[in-house]
Length: 286
Image 1: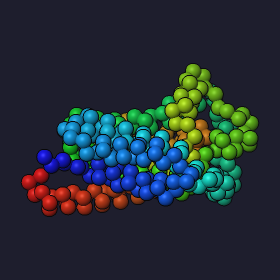
Image 2: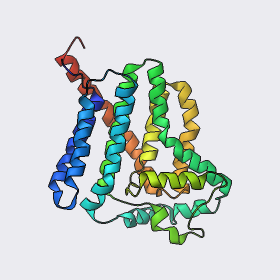
Image 3: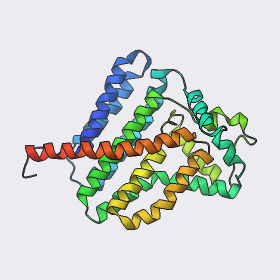
Image 4: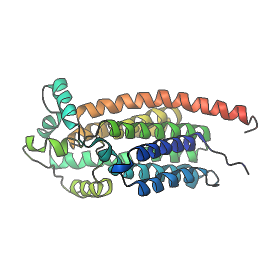
């Protein structure tokens, strides 16, 4: 029985193989066995014979992204050995003659902080919402293309973390703020602590994956789900602002996220089309 491997599965397997090569090259400083088991399991997930549906098309990509992201805590630091926040801080100062998080501190209130934390958290649901809408409306081609572009963006952002590891302003320039931590009225502190426990320290500041994924999802929803795009638009704008307001990201991270979104849409669409063309040539009845 021939297993149908979709473009998104091929992309994930390719990135897992890339990470395996990095692990093997840097084996002296990495938990090799643990990481190889993770990446080989991800590859196997892509080829298991499961029919298209929630399990195959949403859960498996989600598990793959989360597993790779979690593994980066070991990989990034061991490969680079130093944080490059000082470069991003200098760029921010060159662009604004100040530190953007200090500007937002002047308008910070507990209520606004709660709103921003909620906006930031929508990142975890924005791409999922598009996938669910496309599945409900049985737009399989739109779903597969959107999934490929979103995964492409995730993996490019992970490359960014490998090349430019950075913690973000909440760790590096907290001493410059009048209040070292922002506090909300009801929910900010709880969500903040939960995300810290779930994400750990990944050195994932540059580029902002939050900004890139949110913008890509908005773009794709404008193409495929215009009704959803009207809901996502204000959420995405608030999310972008929240990344700096909440001190997760530098301004240059947000700019990098915008550029990453453009590259992912253009590059991801091009690669997806070529994979589809190749598959059609190999199996014209598919």
